[in-house]
Picture 1 (cartoon, rainbow, N blue to C red):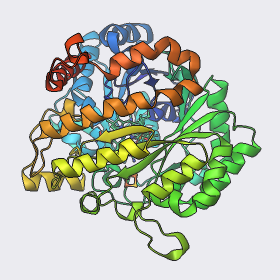
Picture 2: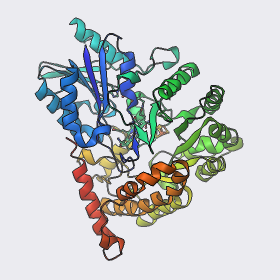
Picture 3: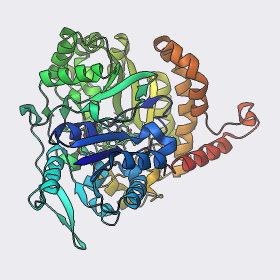
Picture 4: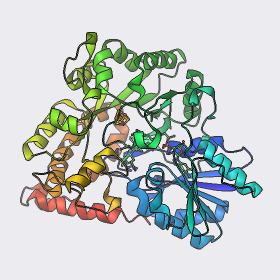
Length: 495
Ligand code: B12
Ligand code: SF4
């Protein structure tokens, strides 16, 4: 069968296409795990943000798919609906399947979207079985993890247990299936790899627990190294490890660093997400190994530096320094120091605008970011389907925006008890632009030619909405903020 798999074009403020266009790891993993006689084409629409309609139309004509698969996050739901409509208008008898976090956690939202199947949770085996059933005219009733339309009703089959990926059940991704080009991070070709799945923590804003429960499964190092080599052989020079929480098993992470070094794969640049507690507690041995293995940027889930906010976010445990078996308080600064001492850069993940936040508490976090992190990744709490945080915000009546396409993390869609959503977003936006500028010299040192040729565009993106009057200080920055918001609104109309 011909199968076309698409990821959505929607990106958010911290992921401007000029700087970063990353492939979706789910789709290549699906492509690597369907039966090999299928002809699969993958298109990450982030690569063609300005010509989505045209590209989808061309791909539909070129590949003439019997099955279309879409990977969707919540803020991309509206775009997904539009793409389904477009594809159906081109081929009415097309079978459409959706998967990913949003369809898995809010399947009802897809009931009237014109889709035929919803793949809930991990998709490799469910999708493979679905294609088998479609090809042979078989029944889908026994395929766990699948929801399907039966007449006017939707039937939700039982959940599929999470995969024990240790045993080789999930084959390597198929990167040959990609049909668009241009994956880059600061001008270097980028790819994603996975070494593990799952997390045992339960941060209130995270979708992972509802998606798959609290568990942690790991791929064998042989498989991970084969995946890295495959990404490299396809041209990647920078790799993003998409593991939910690779630092859950620090000894394994250290061994993985050694395996990367021993395998001669440490000339690549690696990006990874990490917990501050793990880095602070084990940094002395872990950080030098990470550096030697080629880790360059570490995304730290700091979340917030105030105890009250950490409690609300249920993120205190993962930010506690436990060196020598004692609770030594907040781990963040110690973790950052270890990373800096080992010449790695810190992407600081913070969440501001929580229910009890005041102007002062937000400013305290922004000041921390100014002082300690290399690249700010500051977001607003966003009530994604079925997270504990969503329930909290609903109970407190603080959700002020129901337009899901704006649930991108940098648009404040909730207010605090003391501050409007607009004010919280304005504070973050205003501060963050200058933090990003301060990071330019580090980037310049590493990617000189790229920054030289693209610097003006990067700055223009960071300061979208500015005018000559605002640059000269003749205009209130609120006006610039309003123009920035208007640009974002327009940008979201991808289809
Ligand atoms: C890596 C990652 C990123 C990377 C993306 C790299 C990339 N291009 O893939 C980066 C850092 C760029 C990123 C950014 C964002 N992310 Co993110 N990200 C993740 C993370 C950590 C892992 C996702 C992953 O690749 N997993 C590995 C793959 C193999 O698994 P998977 O995606 O789940 O796919 C499986 C199934 O879902 C299913 N499936 C998926 N798609 C499809 C499609 C079909 C047709 C089928 C059949 C099945 C299927 O099968 C797959 C294989 O089993 C998750 C989860 C987490 N713990 O935080 C968040 C997560 C997906 N991100 C999220 C969000 C919100 C964002 C941002 C909007 C803001 C942010 N928090 O940073 C931005 C937006 C990005 C953009 N486009 O601008 C949310 C989504 C919540 C939701 N309900 O939509 C998550 C769940 C985190 C959270 N807050 O809980 N993210
Ligand atoms: S530690 Fe990370 S992956 Fe785990 S629940 Fe918290 S935010 Fe999600």
